[in-house]
Image (tube, rainbow over all chains, first blue to last red):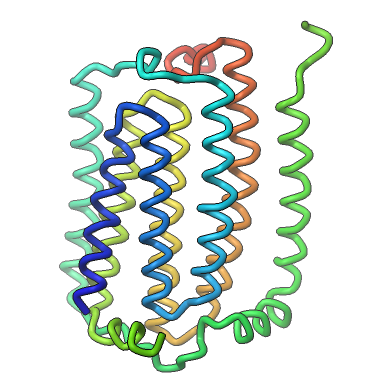
Length: 165
Length: 109
């Protein structure tokens, strides 16, 4: 039980470090650690498929893409833009008000039952695959079209325009 | 694995909602206080991930695997979004040699 609270503390701690780190590369490394703690959360819930997918897709693919982009555009600490303190305080107040609203709604809700895993093979690959390819076959195929169009769009956007150069 | 999953038995669902809303709010604050476009993008990823965790928690809570299928679709969508968004950021950097979002305020008019 205390494992959950320790990992939850680590998630919040590293996600605060993500938005406060001055160097963007450090920020990305903290984001990797944050996603790793989310993977541990999935393992604790016995959602093994989601844990593996989170590990491979987020930590393996998306964050490597972020790192490569950051190295490509060569940011360093001096070029990091500064924001005035007034905007920062306004941002903290806005986010804090948002959090307070959710917490007040949660307090009014007043239901707190424990999360109990009734079916131990709920999040296994076999069970999820059966649901994905029976009930959700059409959204699965549509998401493949989405990924294809995103790939075409990314290649089209990132290639140099030869008419202007 | 069995000893790991027995740890979760006594966590109230409220604590999951609390954790996910705190991480989501940190993402919102990150979008508001940073000016580097890549950091803003990473904050959006943080928000997406907190919502994913809450969907998985409710899926376990209700004993319904649909929530985890939905998380899978959100992950596919996030991958597509990151690919297109980073291509746009690279293109902006090539045109203005900066990723400061205040340089882009010409989009306002």
